[in-house]
Length: 625
Image (tube, rainbow, N blue to C red; front, side, top):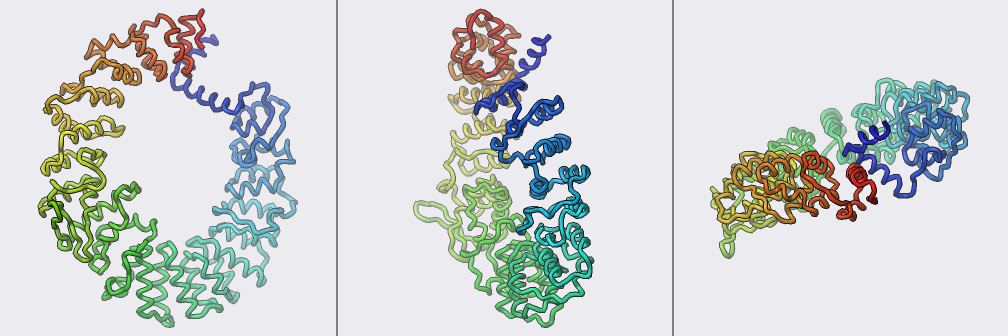
């Protein structure tokens, strides 16, 4: 019975591979132990054997804890879902699990369950303020309001220490803290609440409740405190703008421009509200230019749209904005759209050199395809700004007239984007592709991807781009692609190759076997392209292929059956640990293995238990491994 279950598990290629991978990882640093030898909680935590730990606890085994094995043991334990395991460890090893340490870890990782468990077990009552609050403590992420509520409910924090909890507060968590304070507030606590509000960074932190509490007190926040805060709440900004007694008009202007430079489209509402409602705020031409420059540096479409609405007669080329020094924030770029760029162009900002400046050739950003398409669309729309010329030896050139830039990169980008419309547009305008020099490739090295189409390949044919090696490289790319493919494109490229005299079929056949895609293999076979050549390369590729491909080729080419009993083929099967194919060939009587000695070196390195077990069972008297 045991052998039956053993066979069911280890004859499954996926399960056995997983088991051996885990065993191999455990044994790397001599961490392999028998179940009865495992008694160190630290070791079990370090190797993530929480199931074994739980089992040993339930069976009452004696356990120890060596924290030197894992410095993150507290993080792991606080993060376990099994709260019974957590509380057992807390009770069993109090010298390693102090309440302060646990709560600090939970605050860092925003974990509520361990705190709930300690709360319901009564551990959080009548405690002294935590030692870690002797210094200001700040978390990276906003702490859940439920955590703060529990800690306040059980009196874990004295009000004197509340201000030291410099969480990145959200409205609900800050409301909880304010509600716990004694009213009326003294000046010290008013200042502390302002500190918590300012450091929050939440766009809705200044709730009506908080505003009502603070409204009865004078606001005297020094400008040096305000200028370094990225305030995102419009109501908070307006309250401070109108009520803070410690900032001057000049401070306000500098503060507003500082806020505009920080991220967040809510800054547009701040600017608009002040301009439209504060008659004391005077903005001159230099300030307007500065505002436009900030908007362009951030490439904030909402801010630029408002500025164009506010100052409709202003042209961007009237300002001293230099494209050479222009460097917008990366997070602003994905928001670009074609209509907005056209508006910038019409307003005097040259977006074409700006897009070229990003040096698209060779880059692989997530938004690269978007930027390239924007550039190509602008190129076609503003055709009158380009001049097509020729330099020495009939080499074509595209010159951007406003600044005499050579925009040969446009051609490279059109090819990389497989943009048929742009290539056709260039042809219509007399661009001579016969002599063009592509910066990123040579002819025959275009790598097909999901943007490639049959229409684009046909377009390349019209400019005599498709040399013989081009077709082979395209077919190789289609066959080898792990992604879905355009069947019409495969048909078109394959038919072009078939008519070539003396075309080589061997590498195409091997590529299909390697890729393992039966549908592509069948289609190319129907065109007469698939013709296996009996040699060592075919043996190696077949041994590493899948059952469906091998079955199809064996059916269509009977001579392939002679390979299966080839010693080299069987050796390769073992080396590749291709047990599914190994078993299939055995079951269909295609393999005849006479002696394990012929494959001893491969078996010595083999980690697939199913293959090893086959040899042990077939040759029980011979040493296999």
